[in-house]
Length: 543
Ligand SMILES: Nc1nc2c(ncn2[C@@H]2O[C@H](COP(=O)(O)OP(=O)(O)OP(=O)(O)O)[C@@H](O)[C@H]2O)c(=O)[nH]1
Image (cartoon, rainbow, N blue to C red; front, side, top):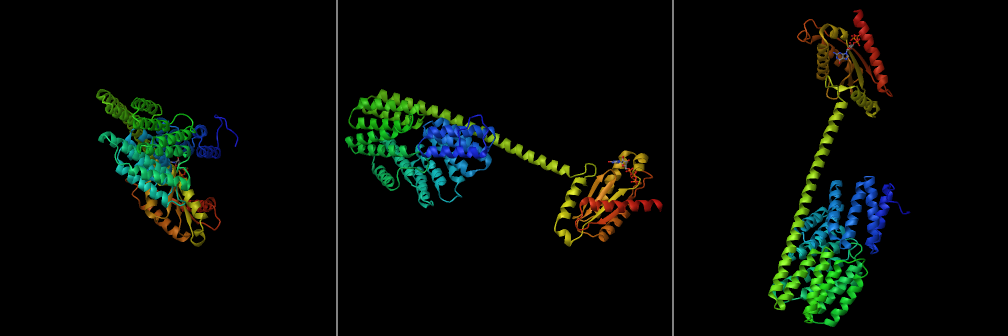
């Protein structure tokens, strides 16, 4: 496909092709290129209001932003994608977008929102067989719990993700989950050290890392999601460096850190990996009692984390600073750091509340949208009903009669069972209008409609054609039966108490009946009934 200018209208096929290319670019580790393609698909989809492509383009853009550490943008875009998928009733699509939303919200410190989004993402795909979509959702839940420091629930969700990966057909590599688990464990240890004052047992971190290394040897460093190869390689080296550092093997730790830097340099622009690297450098300096450098690294870690919108790592940086100052006996400095941390947490909270009020606004819009749809549906049903009903008498109109009768004549059942038409005309109706008023004329027409309805079976259709002309479609009766019913109708009209409607009023009708013949159209059957009715009217006049 040739490059398409932004303003050109795109066909659904071209949109699909752009999105496929975006996905390939992601797999090739080129989120910047994927972003350009997805942006183009989004403009094209919006221009032709192709909602499914719009949702896919938004989800892809959100994922690209998440990969590039543009977490606020990823958050907003994934939210839009999730809403659109929700409107389209596309559960798996919504789940994917919600997973990106949950991961972005976690990093931004919006814990409740992250956990809610991830829980919903898991729920939306739980009916699917085990596969990447379910793995991604459970992994996002693990991540959301881990960043909210609910480490037991995180372990449960990660466990679930690993089981799903193992049961998937074809199996899915659990490396991405294992790396997240290792990362979560490093965080847990970091927090524990802050509260206890010394590093707790690191054996779980070590065994998780060993599983990561083993898995990477087995199946490579790719993720369940695309574009994570360099990130995973960098993380493997970083965690190896952290392990070596905590074991006191500074030399090895330096080497692994240098390796991690080489991998993360493969990614365009600054990402959260650089923040992790600064954390590691801080740990190493601390381990070697180079406290001045450690403080510098932690301070830089906070600034870089804020730059790449990783609020959580900014908080970790503040905690590290407080610990280092405490370690140096600088209580005032430690207190200052904790105040800064508190301020940061307040900012995060304010952002989180704002984001949740946006969600509520959206929910209200969605409800209004649904209500409008229901109203439209109701009024279209009403219109449909009105278009088949005679306004004066409330019985079927000509259109309704013709639709039902032609359907009946075309049906195969016609060959086996006969159908008949009775055409009914009020005698001298003009005189009713002229002698008793137009209103009385209307009431006569309504009374006749009632008489017709009360004398036919449920399966027959009485209708008003126009003026004083009525018809009954006998859908399952031959001419003889139809004639008998019409005789009763004629007698009922004659016996009706017209006098109470208007003194001196007399009403009679003329009826012509015709049985439909094989191959008849409605017009042909009507024509014969009309001729029979005309003959009956003439006879009545002569009598
Ligand atoms: N009250 C009332 N009159 C209507 C309506 N639609 C048509 N008419 C009148 O019905 C009358 C029909 O008259 P004609 O078609 O001349 O027939 P007729 O007087 O019944 O004479 P024959 O059919 O020959 O017995 C006309 O005067 C129309 O104006 C309606 O909805 N309400």
